[in-house]
Image 1 (spheres, rainbow, N blue to C red):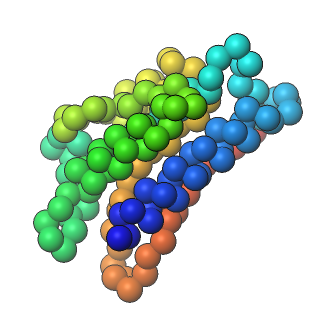
Image 2: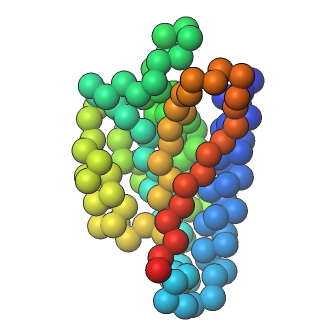
Image 3: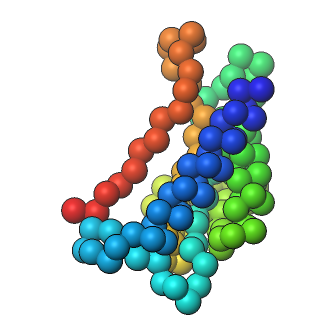
Length: 134
C-alpha cells in the first residue's frame, strides 16, 4: 500500500510541476516550455546494475523498486508529455551520464526516483529536492 501511495504522489508531483513550467512567465530564472512541443520529462530510476541502493526488510532492492516506479510513472505521463528514461533495465548508468541525458535532450523537467532508507524505521514520507536556477 505504501508503494501505491508513493506512486500516486509522484504522478501528481510530476504533472503539477510540468504544468507549472508550461505556464511559467518567461524570466531568466523560470524557463518557459516551448509551445510548439509537449514538455519533455526525463525520469531517472535511481541506482541499477552493481549499485543496488538500499535493501528493504524483505531483501527487495532499491534499484528494482525505483525502476518499476519509474516505468509506471512514464506510462502515466506519456499521455500528456514526452518521456525519456535514463535506464530501462538493470544496468549501470554513471551519474554524469544521467545528467547528460537530461541536458542533451533539453528536458523541461528531470525526476530522479529513489526509495531510500533511514535509521528511524518509524518515519516515512516523501522528500523532494529541486534545483532553482540562480
